[in-house]
Length: 114
Length: 112
Image 1: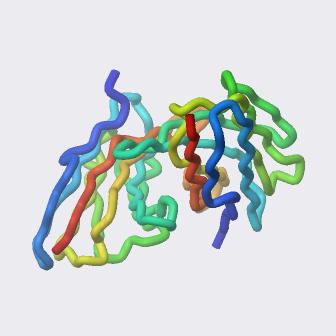
Image 2: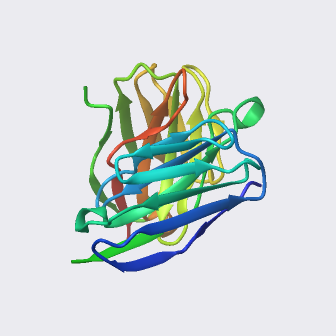
């Protein structure tokens, strides 16, 4: 089946530093999504990418859909304490029997020290 | 607009007991999903419903059943709970045009 490798598994950074995390896949996706999950909550969508090569920003967050359609990265600039959480990438293959189903990475745990 | 809601938020069961987790969405989405989340495993799909009246198995369906009651509601049933089903369960829904999935707050289930 499809697999996503997300790295790094965890990050410990100082407030104000930039953060970068990425996901690679063994197969092609039509959509890449980045979610953030805070303790005791469900994942919340941060950025959605729908075209190969697409670069999208949402405030201090920037994500790109890799040109090969097998990878994506998420950058967070000038981190703040409320950025703490688990960040998940997810890939979506549309059409056929896999319609609508997402494959998730294992998550990146982000800790920001004030 | 509540999005995706789940009940209960917490549940403790004994081995062999049964229960149903409820999920509802008010976004008029066609598709709904049930995931479980375990430490270090990310989210794994249990069952999904591409549209009202249809359900399909996901990656880890054993020990679970689902019912798509109507367009809004999608329930997950554990007929005979086992300790291996201790997990956090998330419901999600998606719809046109992007089919992006939106998640509920989760149900934390412990099976003793």
